[in-house]
Image 1 (cartoon, rainbow, N blue to C red):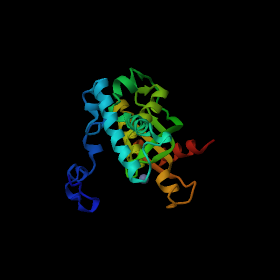
Image 2 (image 1 turned 45 degrees about the vertical axis):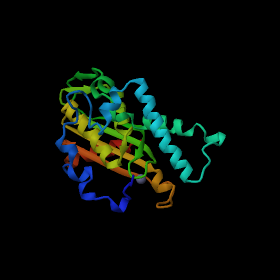
Image 3 (image 1 turned 60 degrees about the vertical axis):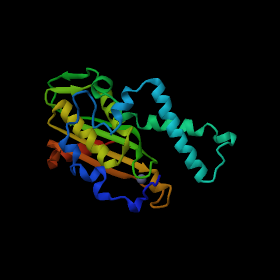
Image 4 (image 1 turned 90 degrees about the horizontal axis):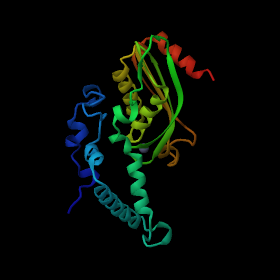
Length: 240
Ligand SMILES: [Zn+2]
């Protein structure tokens, strides 16, 4: 079987180009069955039997054996004998966020009516994610702020929401936006602000950028788009 090389792929017809340019603004953050922007095979993964999961692990492990052989390793060497299976399980863990049910697993009835209309901020939520361009980690901190409109969410749920979207193949910009848009849809607050500071292994370990460089992205919705509210949020974030 001939596998097309990268320069032979017709990029005009790849999925991202046939979908709307901003699928995140056109698709509801929470679907009827509780999934949030699931990947192509997320439902299949969520519904598979333990036997089917073992088969999936086996298929990923086979692919990893190919990679190890191609980089010149001996796959029968003791130290890496179990690496393909280990990697397969790790990869499924790193991407488990696609099939997390946002209602049952993340929110779990932790949305409350509350007459509070001041800014709520949770900062320094640690995240570990995978860059979808290189399949290597990026990690850092998420800061989330919102101004309630009669509804608040359990504070620990904000961290779970960030974790859910981080455990996918990501780009940092999209991760910021997905967290903000989901929170906007769940709480219908006055506004939401998400700031992420992260270090990308694909940058710092390949010498593209100096070690220690970090990338900052933000997504501001509703009243946080107004200058004064955004400034207040950023000032509170920087007060340590
Ligand atoms: Zn990368």
